[in-house]
Length: 308
Image 1: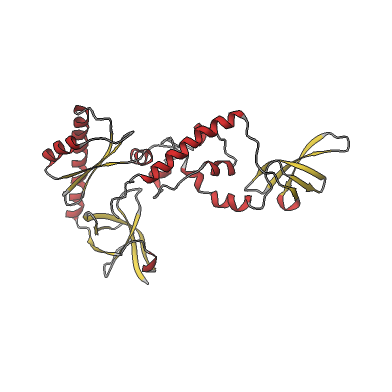
Image 2: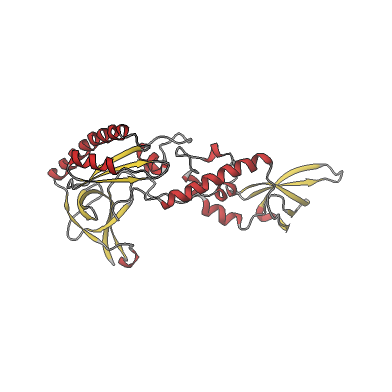
């Protein structure tokens, strides 16, 4: 067991764990830590707790010190320089006629490296750009291509719910989202309704998926034949979270009517093998499958994690 604290380097970046040693650190303290880029300034976001070192993915490094006023001032100065570097790089990209979109610029704390993040449809030959930037800034230049989800995370914005985007407010990692999740949550399979600002499937589809999977494991499918207190019928729709099943039945005059039952009060006689998909849904599914493939490609790209 080891005492650790969680440190974050960006507002919505990943949380990394460090050994505080004998330092008295609290949440919101600015601290200096050792990373693969050298010393970096971060903010404590998880208070001290005991943790099994064997459960950590990377070796535990120590917090060097609590950040001084000088450290914080230097960090703020770097932020100002980054804005200037952004403008310079944008002008160079335009001058060299490169098909790339600059999204962010970041200095390492000691100014030994300047990172430029960009998006592009394919691979870009930016060797000439690197030469010109290195000549201007007199430091090591690194250009890093990121995916569209990372771009939106850096730009910010609001989702269809009206709230700040999850990736901009609290989401640390991008997890793969699938069409299966949307189907199991009875979401519309219209791409425009389940896609986020980035054009990929909405991250929030992932949140309740475990609950849906658990409930669906013992609920009948739409089209299943079930036995109710009023006789046999066919499942017309399901309210998954409430575990309510709407069943189509026929009365003694062979007239069709519908009634809702709690899932525990019905018995599955024959479950449906698959749901019927109409032509409109088929067209939407093709578009959604393309989004899903793009998402898989995004997951293979380097994200904004530069502290591993």
